[in-house]
Amino acid sequence: MENQVPIEVKSLGTLYDSGISSVSAAIGVFDGIHLGHRAIISKLLEVSSENNSVPIVITFYPHPRELIGIEHNIRFLRSPEDKLKTLGSLGVKAVVTIHFTKEIASMSPEQFIGHLTDKSLCKLKAVCVGRRWRFGSGALGTVHVLMDIAAKKGFEVFPVNEVHLECGRVSSSAVRKALAENNISLARRMLSDPAYGF
Image (cartoon, rainbow, N blue to C red; front, side):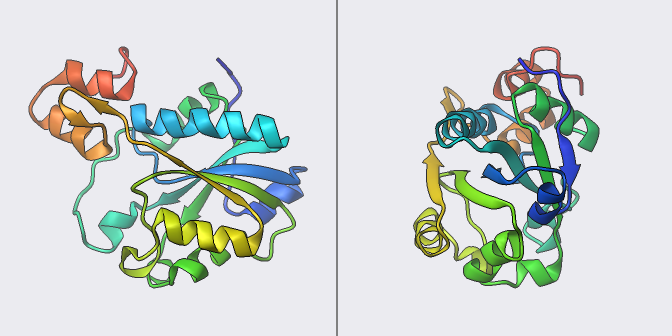
C-alpha cells in the first residue's frame, strides 16, 4: 500500500503545471471508495503501468445527482480529506476535483469530455469507468458513447464490471441503505474497510 497523499488540483492543465505530462484517469464521484470503486482503481493501476502514465482520479463536488435534483441531502461517506488519503493508499497519485455546476450538467457528452480534457497539455491516455457510468446532459453518455468520443480524441476506454455481494450490487446508495438499517458490518464489507467509522 502507498502512504503518499495525492496532490489535488482543479484541472488536467494544473497537473501539467505540476510536472505530470501524461495520465490515465478513473472518472466518477468515488463516494465512499467501496468495492466497486476499488475494482476501477485496480484496473486504473494496471492500465497506467502498461501505458507508462500517472494514475489519477477525476471526481466531482458537489454530488452531481444532488445538483440536478435526482437525490437530496446526500450524505457523503467520506470527508474530502479521508477520500484523498484513501485514494492515495490505493496508489492514486493525483485527484482532479471538478466543481460540478448546472452549466456542466447541461453539457452534451462530447462537450463534457471536452471540458475535462481540452486546452490541457497533459495527455490523457486512458479512462477507466464503471460499466454503468453515465455522463452528460440527460445522462445520455454511456460507455459506448465514451468509446466513440475517445476514438476521436485519442485515448482508450476500459469499462469495469460491477461488484456484487449476496446482498446485491455494491454502490454508494447500497452503503447508505445499509447504514440506515444499522447494518454496519455489511456497510464495512462493501467499503472494504473494517475500521471505517460512522
